[in-house]
Length: 408
Ligand code: NAI
Image: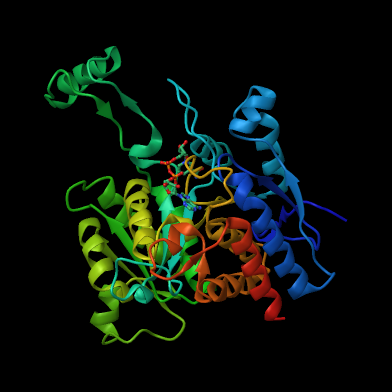
C-alpha cells in the first residue's frame, strides 16, 4: 500500500516499502527525459528488492504546463503535496519572464526550506572533458541555498529605496557611496551556516569521505564569508568533536596522520579553490560553500567532468528533499527525443540513497557508467567524440536499462 515517507522523532527518515514520491515532470526536455528515468529507477528497485519495495509516483503540476492548465506556475497544492510526501524528484522548470516573478526553483527552495544544495561531481569514462585527468575529480558540493546575495534583497540604481538606504548608511555609518548605486544585501548567519556544515559532516561520515573544505572569501568579506568559515569550524567541532579534526590540529598534534574514523575539516579561499580543482583535484573531497561560491563552483566542476547533462543534484532540508536534474529546459532540443537523460537518472539514484535504498542507487550509477563506457550516447556527448554513434534519449535510456538488467 502506498504511504508517505515520514520523519521519525530523531530526525531520521521512516520509509515504507511502497513510498509515495512526488514528481514534477518539468518543462522543455522534462517530458523527454522523465519516462526513461522512471523506467530505470523502477527497474533498479525491482531488481534489488524484488516485489518487496516499489515507488508510487505522484505526478504534481508546476511550470509552463501547469500555467497553461491552471493559470498557476507553482500551485499551492503542489507545495502541500511535496510537504506531505517529504520526497520529490523534478525535471527542469522554465523561469517565467516578467517583473516580480521569481524562479520557481527558488520558490520551491524557500517554501520547503531546502537549505542544502548537494551536487556530487564525478567522472564517467569516456565522457569528453577539457581535463587531462578528469577521473581525479570526485567531489561533492554542499551549497547553502537560502541566504547570501541570493536572498534577493536588492534595489535598482536610482530607485527611491536605494537612495533611502544610502541616506541611512551615510548618516549613521559614515558610508559615502556614489548616488546612483544599485544596492544588494549579503546576509549570512551562524545558524544557517551551522546547519549546512552539520549536513556536510553527516554526509561525510555516512559516505566515508575524508575531507570537508570550507570555501569562502573571508580574506575580503571578513564578517560574512569570514563568518561562514568561523561558524563552519565551530559547528563541526561542537557537533562532532570526537570524529572531526581540523587540518591545523592534524599537523600540530598528529603529524599529518588522520586518526581512524576521523574526517578532516579545513578552509580555503574561493579563488584558490578554482585553481586547485584544476591543478590538484584529487586533494578535494567535500566542499561546503556559501550560496554564490557554491553556484559558481558546482557548474565549473560539472564542466570539468563533461557538463550539466550528466550532473545530478538535490535540495535538502530537515523536512523535505527535492532531487533534480541540474540543467535547464533546453528549449532548443525539447520534444526531439535528443536530450541526455543522465542528470535526471543520476538524481534519481541520489533519491534512492536518501530513502536508504543505496543498493538500488548503486545499481543505477553502475548501469549509467557501463552504458557510457559502451560507446553509444546522446548527441551532446557523442558529438564531441570522433567515431561515436549518437542515439536518441529514449534509446540511451534503454541502453542504461539493458546494462542494469545484465548485472542481476
Ligand atoms: P539549459 O541548461 O536549458 O541549456 C543550456 C544548453 O545545454 C543548451 O544548448 C541545451 O540544449 C543544453 N542541454 C541542457 N540540458 C541538456 C541535456 N539534458 N541533454 C543535452 N543537452 C542539454 O539552460 P538555459 O538555456 O540557460 O535555460 C533554459 C530555461 O531553463 C530557462 O527558462 C531557465 O530559467 C531554465 N532553467 C531551469 C533550471 C532548473 O529548473 N533547475 C536550471 C537552469 C535553467
